[in-house]
Length: 374
Ligand SMILES: [Zn+2]
Image (cartoon, rainbow, N blue to C red):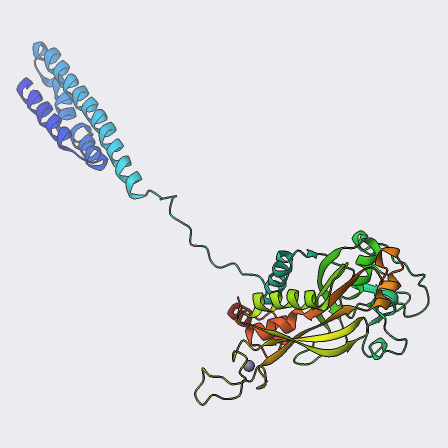
């Protein structure tokens, strides 16, 4: 029996040493030491041996069982560590890989155009300021030299606020209202950003060079007008500012937005608060100012500039002395300081720049359209 035990032990230890997985070792544990295995059966047969053989046989069988048991335990520890290693390598996540985020959106076209415009003028030394969207009739019309019967004052062209309307406080930066309002129709939604010309001069001494982007309101609604739209006002006041400064600044602006080859021209016009007043045309970026699409077969007339080679982009002029006087501050004595002002529609600039013929889709939040303009 002792030989048999030795044989079983050696065979068992060889099998354990050869096993390479924890599953195989578990099978060996059952096969070698389990209820139906040979070695435990031998142990149970010890009691049938003659008394002098029982002691050595039982001892040998127990030792064999313990030897196999510890061999399995050791081997399991080794194999399990190797298996873990393999699994860690297989399931490793490379955290240094760059991410692949879904697109999460972008700035609206009008926001991007506004920022482009701001960047141009910041580069030319202008500050960017904002003003209140509810205005006094004084700042929106009177102080800007609008005659009492000027058609823009008509309630069909301006959103007036009822006297009982609860108004939000004006931003502190804009300064307190200076007129003694109180009668009917003295408050309105500003129809242009120009009232900020007056507010700036009320609170700051020259020189001032600012642009004022913001929302403005007029009761218009068609393909090229919406009741709420956006303007950028510009004002530069100092000693000896001339029409040549106006042209230089606006030429730089036109070239930054529409291309380095652009030229501008000044056309006489009329605005109540500038004198002389001019409209600024930029040479057409679509046809290169020729009026004809040389890039299209048959060289048809250019639709963007209607064959003229020029596109109107904004209104401007030298600040009317009456406006400087209306500020009511000696610092703005029109005998001493001069300047120019301009105003442009952000929607118009965006439509011209990106070839849109209807601005209403810009406000409809259709991502299929807005995505194309991103
Ligand atoms: Zn053209």
